[in-house]
Image 1: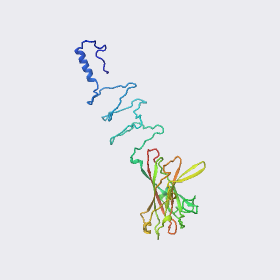
Image 2: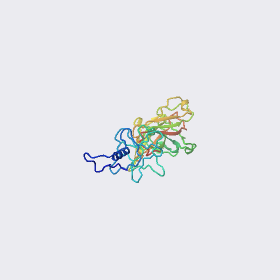
Image 3: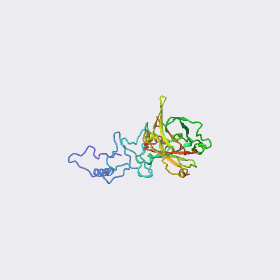
Image 4: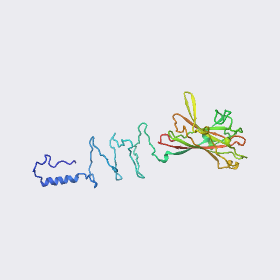
Length: 320
């Protein structure tokens, strides 16, 4: 019911107001909403006509559903509860609060819309792991120069015949190069990629074979590097993800033979600093492990796993 005038024609100058009219005015006044800070209780339905609205103009203003069965709803097809300005949002701001669907409802995203992770969200950085032996391809260098020359698939050297990588999850080498700085190498595609994120660290874990009288050193130590590849119009292009050291990261081991033979294993940490914003629509990515080589090298390195740290994960579009 709306509040109507007590005397629609109005009172003329000097006109008389009856007690009944005063009582009617009093009755209507108590049905009006109190706009002061005291607040009020609305007992009926208020209909907002076309062009009308409730405008929350001050700081800390809100519309609140304050009981377990209270709802703020868009009750007909096409009705919208929206945030229509840049930076506006719908928020569940207390622990345990939810924005949820039920009874067949959906959260639907328009084209090129997707859930974002807020700045500081722990999910913006993730460590993903993959087993080397599940994806490896044995390679051998065809170059006579330093590591990182031309590569060809090797079908006879370093094949994991006695160790089954699909069962054990690692690859064990079965040949070793005793030529300094000319190792056998093993490539592994990176299959756990986060599109749009930054690949900020790659760690390869491995076990050197036991029995070294002396550990390898310098460029005879194992090394890793990561490449991104692109095939455009039949031309294959490759680029390193590390700008220093010719793109390579050697093991930094400097201990004794006993420490190199240790059952605790070894690792190499590679820190990309270029070409490391992942773009799965354009590139493939793979890592190469160059085994130990030179006079002190022993066959039987077990290449275990790859740990990839991704940062700047902005949204959930391409999580593996």
